[in-house]
Length: 139
Image (cartoon, rainbow, N blue to C red; front, top):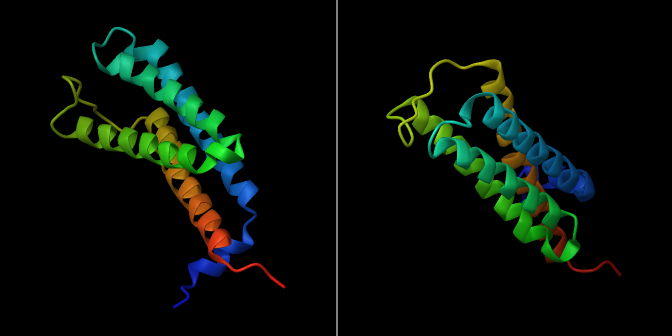
């Protein structure tokens, strides 16, 4: 059974999805580094987690550049961004490692956009890649 979304995924060039996903990860990393230096550098656990997020994004971006590691890097990118979003959500509720977020500042909005974009774009790239591998060769 074909879904409506399936043909649309195939029409977007997979190279565009990989590249856009990498750009979203780069944006996420940049915001986390900026926020580390602006606000979180003195906050135990949270500050180092911001730097760890940026480093993990950089590794995933490097993996996306090579065809042999692209799928694993995309999975890692989805996990990194999903975990960052989860951490942010938790920080608004019970708090995360002693930090409780208040307000939805523009920098947080930007971060959420990058993280959601990374999850959606890299998931779509993985789906498109799996779909193209599953199709029998033409001829």
